[in-house]
Length: 133
Image 1: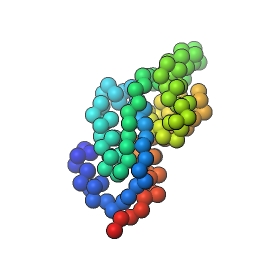
Image 2: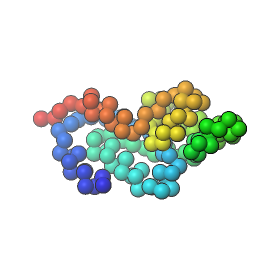
Image 3: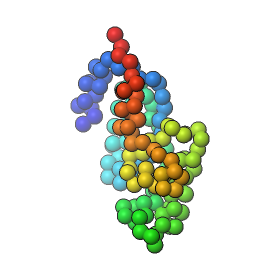
Image 4: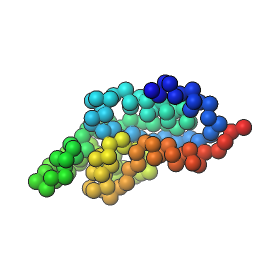
């Protein structure tokens, strides 16, 4: 799908500020739609942005599992294994994006950090982009 739309994106007369983002992917996406990760990187690259993939495991939500009161502490322990350090890293502040709604919810829940979806970050850049002539 991205390859079909690449030409359209390339032809857009937009110049985005160069920026690097760090993608934290949803577990399901990693296992069931692994190619989408490269698609995200390609879209960012076409628009003049860099998207690095962070090596993280499960955020601990696992569907409704993390919402259940009995599982809250286990959910937090899983989150703390790989997500917490990235989410609280000052060097990544404002540069993280995450595809999973549940993952973004966990970051807000446990660290009070709002992580945008990759499309939200792209939209910000497109709104701020200048038109090249």
